[in-house]
Image (cartoon, rainbow, N blue to C red; front, side, top):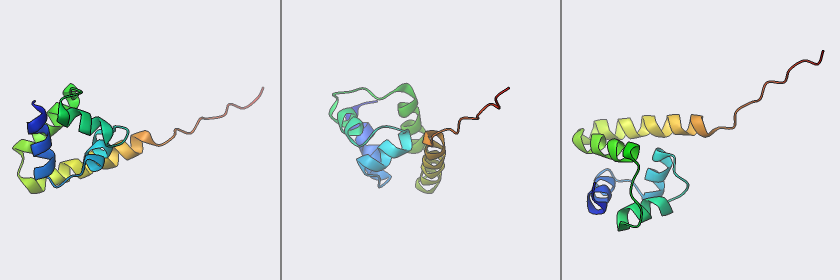
Length: 87
């Protein structure tokens, strides 16, 4: 996927670089900027998410991205470590 196509999809969906970074689980908007300028290549998973979002009607694409955002937030939460009882 070209940098221009990546940016075109993001803009069509009304997402900022920071929004898309959050959805894709990236650290801040800089990785998205790097992808859109061609400095960095998107991961295969990021490309797949953007391709699927591009193929869906806008409403469905936004529903998908909202669902991904929700699941990424859950996945990024610190995990509670179970304490083992002393013997």
